[in-house]
Structure formats: structure tokens, C-alpha cells
Picture: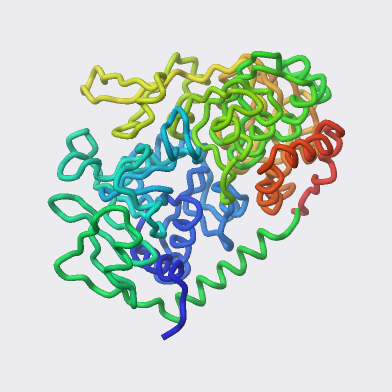
Length: 257
Length: 283
């Protein structure tokens, strides 16, 4: 078996969740790496959309920002930002939204706004950006986040974008018709919402990862599915493509203009 | 009616203390040279609107030009925090900064409503999250036809919009290509505008029949500032300088290193300093 890092299996597992016919709204950072890995391996026809307005983009290197020239140059077309949010996102044309966050709770609500009180923050984070509407307008949401006690918390300091709110049918009750988070991919495990409670529970552990390790890196009492699978390890081909992508990206970003 | 002038004259005429200013450019075509000129001219008490404050507002905030920002994502893209924005929000340095925080969808809709001459923007958003509780400018309205509850925010109607574009002709017709962001909307929503461009040309180049052009009679001041978007980029001219965005993290982290950089690169220089970044890509 090839050696790989926890972030690599996380990215690979996230990429595998995407299908060739998906239309995916991609966040910057880890979601972007996963979405492009999917495109460069099993899902060559996937439609990737970034909020800068680039539709069906095929970047050769990962963008550092959401609107790098690379995204525009390799896109089918580029629309204005109001059009992107109105016709494409709000219009219900996006199947999967791919998000990350600073903090997540067991119902997959996300915080990217503040740590501490909003009016007197301990840490001011960047804020929601597109996430509040991505979370409710896309058909379903995949979330990719490395696990830690600081990030996987019992109670969020601020709800930037909703997941399953307070569980059960609470998401539908506030008028949201889309599915919300259907997968949470971490560096240790795969979580999915339990059908009734909508709590995110572990359905698969990455090879060599124990239940205790998952619990140690989670701020709530983790629950496990009746049958927990083992995540298939990354293949040599997946690792090669991912690593080459990162090498190309690092080279491109190091160049001075 | 567009007036072709220098950047310093344009800022002097269009941007006043206390104004509400929208300096737009969604990652692409960020008007950095114009931001530097506003800092050099010592504008104060500005309300700064921008979807992604980026380095341009980090600089204006750190130099004490702003009393309020209206924004939706305040990070250094792909790198981390905007340290000057954080210092202002967390520690009130160099002055207390009021924030009005939105989502991207709300900001984009608010610009579009401003351009359309409407008092507010209506969209399907802000459902269940925490922002409506901390931003009194987020309200809900009921659709009179279907009964659906929708979000409403006030239209953006800035005193002045500042943008950067690739080209203008000698009449001041401005052409924008690539990632378009909300620049067209910002200019049309504002009372006044300043547009910096890579080049002023005799005639706009051959273009798609649907190219994005702001007619000269919708534009205020046009100034040629080659390289004026650096370290952001101008499609067809120069790429985004991602290594500068990474370097900014260190420069802006501490107040003294920030000040030293601003003194050397902004206060001690003029818009012509941007020219070294303007290298038109051979097509």
C-alpha cells in the first residue's frame, strides 16, 4: 500500500464523493483540491463552478483565490457575480455545494465568522462569503474539514451557514427545501447524517484510525453507524495525480509576476 | 460625461472625507493604485463597501481612512487573515471600525439593486444563520404573489465607485474583460466614479458583440495607470501575484512592519510606481 498523509486520504475520499455528471459549486482551499482531483481522475466531465462567475472551469493548477485568471481562462464562460448568485445558485441549478469551515457542530452547521462573542471577538474570521446561500440553495452539501477539538465543537460561537440546524426536521421547518450536508469528509473518517436525527455519525474510518482517535479530536460525543466501513486507501494513481497537482500549483504560486 | 485626467486629480475631485466608497474588483482588477492615492491624500471617515476587503481595504483600514466597512468576506484569499482588519475589529487600532456584515449573495444583489435604481434588493437567502441577528439591515419581506418569505437588504448607493479596467478609449468608454465581479453594477449604482485603466487607446479593440462596456456618459473620471491592479491582476496584461499575497501576511501581521511598508511603498511613491508590474501579455 502506498504511503499517504491524512490530508491526502481526506482529499481523495472527498474527490470520490463527486460524480462525472455533477454540477459543483466549489469553495477555495481543500474543496477546490478535491473537486479538481475528481475532474482529473474519475469525473472528467464534472462541471465546476466558482463564485467569481467561472462556469465549467478546468484549471491546470489550483487557484489561490476564488477568482484567479486560470479559472477564467479555462472556463466555458464567465458571468458577473450578481448573475452567478441569482441565476445559477439561487436559481437552483447547482447540485452539490462543497464547503469547508473553521468550526462545525454535530448537525454540520458551520462557523467561519468569529470565535468568541460577535461584538467582541477573540478571533475575527473572514466571514461567510458565499456560504450562507450555498448552504441552502445547492441540492446537497459536502463538507471537508480536518478534525480537531477546536474545530469540531459542541456549540458554535456563531452560525454562519446552516446544516441540519437542531436536527430532525428543523431544516425543513424553517423553509429550506434542499438536503443540506449529506457527507462530512475529515482526515480521520467519513460522517453522514443519521436519517432520523440528522446528527452526523461516522460511517467509515480511514485505514488504521481508531474510534478513540476520532473521539479525541471531536468536541461532542461521537456516534458511530451500526456498521462502520473502512475507507479504501488512496490508489497510486489518485496519489500521483493529487501530488502532481500540488507540485504544479506550488510552482505557479511561487512565481513572481 | 467621462473626464480623462490624472489619478491624483480624479481622487481629489471624486472622493471626499466621510464618503461612502465602493472600490470593487472580485479578486481580478482590484484598484490598488487608486487605494494608495486615497491613502496619500489622507481621506478620513470613509465608509468602505466591498464584497472582499482584500489587501486594498486592509491598507486603508490600517492607515486610519475608514470608520465603517460593509463586506461579506474579509480574508486574504487562500492565505489567511487580513491582519489590519482584524486588529481594527478586535483591538480598535488605529481606530474603532464599525462593521456591517453580509453574505456575497446579499452584496451582489445590493449592487444590482443600486444599479437598477431600486431602494432594496430581494432574494432567497439568510435562512437560519446568525447574521440577521447582528445586522439590522437584513430584513424579511413576504412575496405578495406566493407568500414566500424572502430576504431584503438596502440597495448599495455609494457616493463614489472606484474600479480598474483593461482599457478605455479617448471618449472614456470603458471595456472590462475576464472575471467581471460587480464593477459594472458598482459604477452604475454610484453618484460618482473613478476608473483607472491599463491603457487609454484610440479605439477599443475588436470585441464580442456583447462585450462589457461602460459607456462614457456613465463614467466620471478615467485615469491611465498601467499596472494599477497589482498585486491583483488584469486579464490579458499580468497575472495575479500570488506570492505577494502570501508575503502580505507577514508584512501586515505587525503594526510596525505594516507602517514601514506603507511608508516606503505608498506614502513615498506615486501611481507611476505601478508601471513596473504592467507587462502586457503577448496574445
